[in-house]
Image (cartoon, rainbow, N blue to C red; front, side):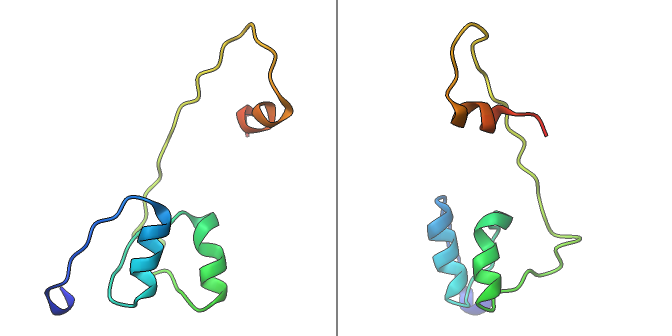
Length: 76
C-alpha cells in the first residue's frame, strides 16, 4: 500500500476524485472514465482487472411509459 493510505467511497464522483489525486486506485464505470482517459488517466490491466454489475429493471405491464423509460428499458 502506498504510504499506508486507504480510503473508501461510494459515489462515482468521490471515487474519481480519489483516483485523480494519483495516490489511489479504484473502479469507475467506462462511460464515466472515458473523459478522464482523454485527460491522461489510464486503465490498469483492464482485460484482467474488471467487474460487471448486473441489474434488473421491474416495470408494470399495464402502464403508459414515457419515451425515456421506453429507451432505458429497451433490450439490447
